[in-house]
Image (cartoon, rainbow, N blue to C red; front, side, top):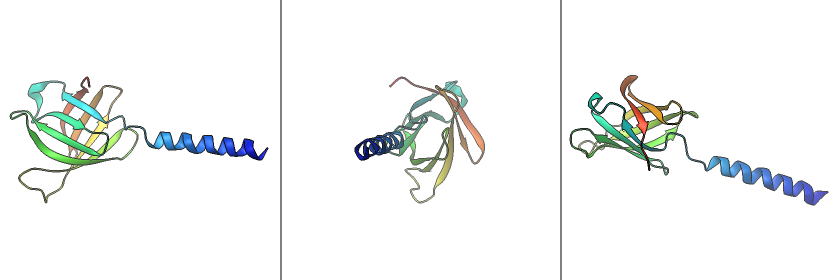
Amino acid sequence: MKQRIRIVVLSVLIGLGLVGCSAHPGSGNWGLVEPSDGAVSKVLVHFEGRAELIDAKSGAASHHCFWGGKSGSDLQLDCTTPQDTETRLRFTLRVEGLDRMTLAYNGQLVGHYKRLPQ
């Protein structure tokens, strides 16, 4: 009986550990739905807590970010620019369904994005 309880407890702990290691739905590569709509053409959200905002004109990373999950559908991105690494700019990424998301800065919409193939 004790061994059975140990197996159940171990199974639950392993299951909880695996859930904690799963990727946030916001992780991945995102591209603007309408490329002419904004200054940020792509949002690259890496699994390990880093992200990059790609400038539409230059194609280079305009912001380097660290992200954390605010909820099951929202990420908070704390970003800096290459020109000013001291000032933190806070963006919010909201996943809407499996392949759509919005990016906002200070509550203002930056753009609508779709998930890009990996």
